[in-house]
Image 1 (cartoon, rainbow over the protein chains, first blue to last red):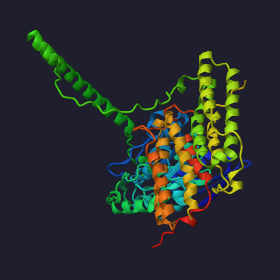
Image 2 (tube, chains in turn cyan, green):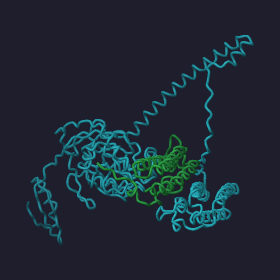
Image 3 (cartoon, each protein chain N blue to C red):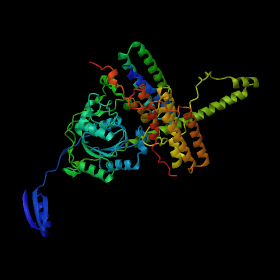
Image 4 (cartoon, chains in turn purple, red):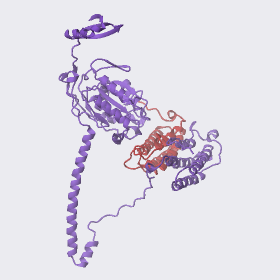
Length: 492
Length: 126
């Protein structure tokens, strides 16, 4: 290295000279027009290992876009939406989430998608990441998923791994179980990727910058990280898919896990043996041919359209055949003498057993919320809690709560609340018809409530007959009302 | 010893009554109700296993077992659609983040904190 001090006007000539000598200015300081340059030989071209992902990559379908397979970054956007929404959400993800996913792929990520659940969702990510050894960073962004805490689960998985019960250690999630993927894949995932923790970040520019920083050849500062592309992981990709042993991990109770693990260990998920990593292609990152593949969801849609068209053609054909047969049958009937015709017409062609008597199912409340105004929705939602509350209180009434303090107190509160709701309804701007509907519901709830005890007795804990602890079933039942948080109470 | 089982069994009729009530609402088509139903069934099954392994006198045991079975039957009879999906996602449930079945009904069991299960449930060995 060489340190050279020169006047500012000579900068251009100095740069030419440095270039002629196949050197580069490593550092340049300007102090009052006097430049100090540190000059060194140009670094040799960076060569790094890039490999092809496993044949069936990405091995797991999901809510993601596929970008540049040779990129070192995968982006996971946390999808803070109610439970059970994953598959349909592909089309319905909030625009700001979709934007993050798109920006990530457009900036150069290998994969970018959403994560919702702390079990199946993470398992899918693990499968798709270990299938592509080029992925070395997991950029985790978006708002934490309420209830699931999937973001903390991903972080805990990378930091601590899983325990013998296949539960992510130190995760704040409720059911962070990884039952469906091989242990080998989990370990590989943890070794292969480094976390870029951007949980809470929703700015597309920041996510884009993170992805860009990940594929730089030279260490590049990004927030608290120093990022660069270290090349593919030293071992070949692992092809694995979810074994499907546990489709609803959220329903697993802790006491069941041991038994479940015995079954899983008996039939571990199949892992295709990894092929050896070929030394070639070894290439500079920019020399790699980037092949952006079509999005899996688009392929699926095209297949569906094709299948739909085929089915429509078949249906059309069958329809034609049916018309011909019906025509022929009608002609034959017409040819018969009248008596015979009657016989033919009334004779059942196929003996059909009478269907079993099925009890009529109770009417499910129609999903009418789409057409409700904000004010109507408020009353609709408030009233939805009461059937549950009243049923719960009626069940308490069959227990020692019948002669206790809390049940009558709660019933009285419920009556008051229904009264207030009724008053609010009368002062609302709802249509007469809608108001009458809601008032009629309130009246029916009041009738049920009034049949429950309203005269307080002694607290059954004090008496010594209720020994459940500090909690109370009757007051607990009323907490159902607290679950209704939207929309806010309309101002009168 | 039987207090643990008795107290646990005081919660289930209330939980089940609530779930049954919500099965008449849109919750009938909801994964939340389905999940809660499965959880209740499993917990009752576990309660049965623990009771059988406990030192509760046989006579009392039979009475408690009958109550467990009766609750299990009730749980099984809760009507849930075959194809369920989160009704918030479907756009039919707009009460907020909470869920009547998983948070509300199931949450009620948390009111029962005494006696601790370790006092009643034998510790597995081996």
